[in-house]
Image 1 (spheres, rainbow, N blue to C red):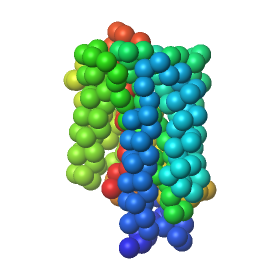
Image 2: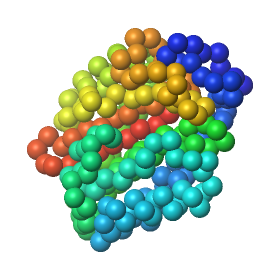
Image 3: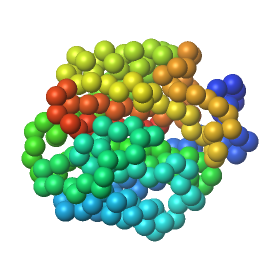
Image 4: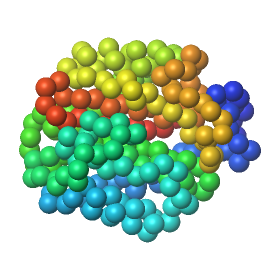
Length: 220
């Protein structure tokens, strides 16, 4: 099935909603495989190199945005910010994976946060990012605008006791490359976002400790 979209939701001639869903599934398979391979005692750079190797082994078409793996305090960094140093993953720690990969000519983009050990606040933070994503995704299904989505996300994060990073507000995807369509941020989109062409991103910070959590997935 193809979808006729235009303007900030424009797609290419090859676009298929079913293939976007397939790319989503393969991207999550890759995220899970990389997460399972990351262990305490590993440097952030080592995890990054391992992640790239796993993507090659999974026969991706290509990477469309750099693979990001953030440890500890670097989980507060946005996509465009460099990590501080090359931290070692501790026995009680937190990390996230963020990847953008092309499968069958379509862009997958997914990210999630994981913990090592038993730090209760780190575990709660990772879980909260996913819970907040689920709440906002449910609100999207009511047909609201992208602007309303992130207003709702901010209110919900505050009610949950976390700080939402509003410098991260979601973005377009499609058949590769989506960038030619200049879709902008989901959080600035003043219409109801259609399925299969937008990534909802959630990044939160602990209110007092130096770490955060990230979760993103395709709205479909």
